[in-house]
Length: 364
Image (cartoon, rainbow, N blue to C red; front, top):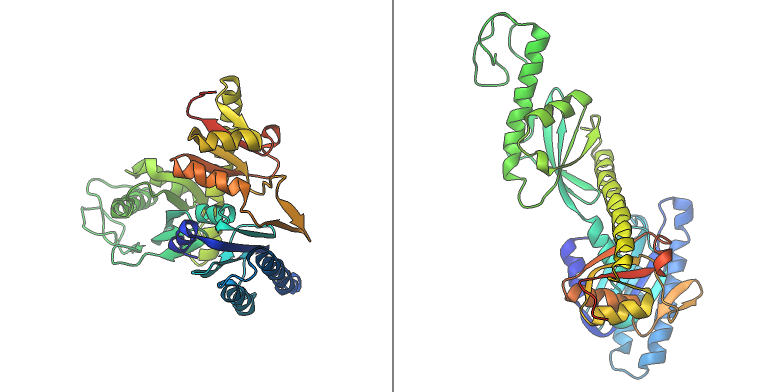
């Protein structure tokens, strides 16, 4: 799923916007239940549409879009969830890489929580993978890596020198020093650092904006890189080991670096929210948060990913709403007024009744 497609769904408004989200399974035995789960969710959605829009000219078309999406779903390549988003002008299926729960939401815009979480998971980054023979550069988006092969990368180390009195040379396959005798192993280490230094310099044109860098290699390579790099401020994390023939594994480990940092940032946000309580700069619970958000006071909204307002119903295991998701309306209001939204783990905001809004100032 491309970021542009998710952003298009988040920006779409219409009547009605139908969001059908169900979990999916990796294991083939468990995957057998996915078609029935999605079918049942589609039945719930169509019942809600008939109840609320009976006689509407668009009803038959929207129902057909739902049926077509269910029929055409590829259950073999699903990851963690399936989303069907349908309106009179839109029909889009999303394969979620994040865990999701069953829900059917009908409103004037698509349910945004899972879309925003998926968008957050599609972080872009670079991975510099180092070994004694190669240095490769990858462009990462979420859990997908694509190797950059543009003439500058990959770097290949060719150890063609003869061990004698070293002299200055112009490539990694020749001697790189001149002077007196030097131990061969020491010379190899010096040349390896120069190899890494050149690769680091070549990274400059790719490390634009705030794009983070993850470095991978053995302990010596990681240490050497941090000694010679001019991009230390870009290094977000390290993945020890060599994964040149295991791109998927490297991508998963790189994603885990981001996930660990996100979890640490969330802990810090909760600690900050507690400080805001003492300063009377926080709204807690649905009613307070909604009022403050509509007044444009929101600095940072913290909301449990699976937060369900009591006004929303649960039917047959599905979270359902035919008036739009109340929490979703708050999310959109905060974002429209340039506030930030952070989705927290279930239960982590229990002390704030599942939702809290840090305020720019207190006018209450």
